[in-house]
Length: 428
Image (tube, rainbow, N blue to C red; front, side, top):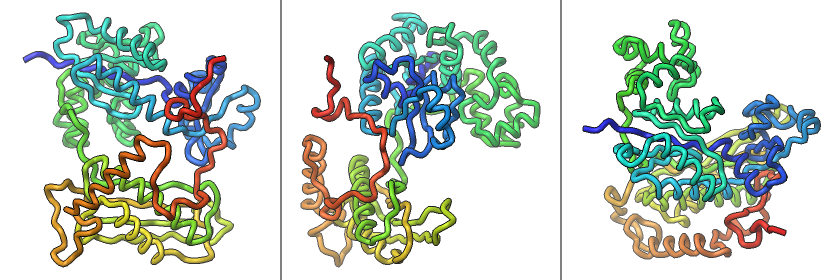
């Protein structure tokens, strides 16, 4: 049996790189991307990192640095980032027989047997160049016989400019040299708490973790850390995911851009969240058996009265019909709403998710709307989803048509360069 080989392709400073791609005037300018409601830094360009801008720092804490260094701010543009991610993954899928999308900006590629056609180093360089040519985004590539080692190879490709952004770690001697230089907290799957416990045992580098007795790791930590150590020694332990596992819960929530007081405005927000969550539900070919709705004030604002409440309901028949789920959400919201509070956040969560093989209708219920096997319901939802995917005009619930007082604050939002004809970049 052939030794498996994996490549991890990871976009560099993904959110910031997406913003810079359509702004060549910012090529050498520090850029930071902000979280929802423009609150904290969630992405930094290499220039911003060089200035010492920390991840997660509130933007109002770096006002002096912004003025002093001309740092450019951008609100999170999830539509742009999602589309650019799709383009990167499509490019990679044309280059490798099996691609496992790990996150919005990184993917594992199965390269087993590739050495008969070209060297792994050459493939990594080709992947790096092709993504840059087709999409315009910089990536680094790490190649190794296990996913954990591929992660470390990618770490080295980013950390050491002399690598040219590609590190082939299939050679055992080269693996050992890198492991000796990498802190244990940089190993994939070793979090802060585990790293602290390991360091207390004088395990401070990746190679020390790899050389630790496996039975000791299993006894003092878990089988998960034992598998990590095995992977550091070149033994694959993580199964390949040809398709992502089905979701167990779907959450849709958001902090408001401004305080919300009226029930009608909360209804509009919760309707929007319930609709979006149900669209994701249908996208995964799933049905929800339970719904939870919550609302809360701002716990960090001590000058106002505080209130937080949630409520849930189990459906008699699992559903993926937006009308049914929105109606239940409205009933739950009205049961927990209290007048006189300054609401800062609301959300919905769908759980008890299943596919159609486990559905069971209500013996005494109507089959007209939203029940598990209602053909009319499924046809209607399918038509709505198709229209919303292909048309600029959107079909939405009536409660969503009012002014979006709950909308996020995004004062530095860039255009939808790749998904809106009216916002295509212009070359003068």
